[in-house]
Image (tube, rainbow, N blue to C red; front, side, top):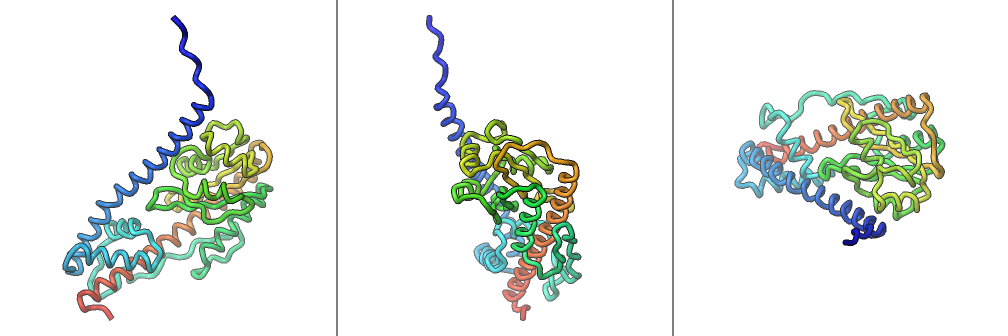
Length: 285
């Protein structure tokens, strides 16, 4: 009787990569399936509230407001189901003042209502790279509809890296670990750290990165709304406490600002949706 032959290491690596790909596909499919009943629920609310003829008319209002304000349909539908009912059809949905703009002193920006997100994210990336002495990095924001991190700013990283990590769900990356744990994550050596799948590891190494630090951007309730990551060309040691403190301040301030900004956009989309519904009743202007 002979012993079973040892598995081919290349075959094992291929199987792991395939498993990672299938896991990512399953993640997106689950997000799509979860979104369908949520949208149907929102359609029912709008149909009743504005006396719409059918669910298709309610979906049309959702789609118009979603596209006009660049808010994911699932995100808007969730806001409809969770937000308190407007007090009257003839009044605004949110008659009170908007919440105060959170400070952004850690990255030297005067946080006013007209500061745009691209400016804030570009500056937080620049500030993070300066603190860490790094030349490569990226910023990801949480995409509620996909339940994943999406790259929105990057510097020093080549196109294959940006394409491969354009959308990152739960799993085999330092940014995913930082988002899930809501804490700074350091990978001292990309070549050996077990957090990465072999496929992800290869893409990162080919980009010239041997170490990385991923800092979560935390909203006021402690939820992660994004991650900023810095990549270094050589393996690294643990950060100095002063660096950890500085990055923590950046993560909290920018996270609170992003949460405030996202809620403001959704609020505007809901107000627009309310106006469309009132117009369907003949009560809008």
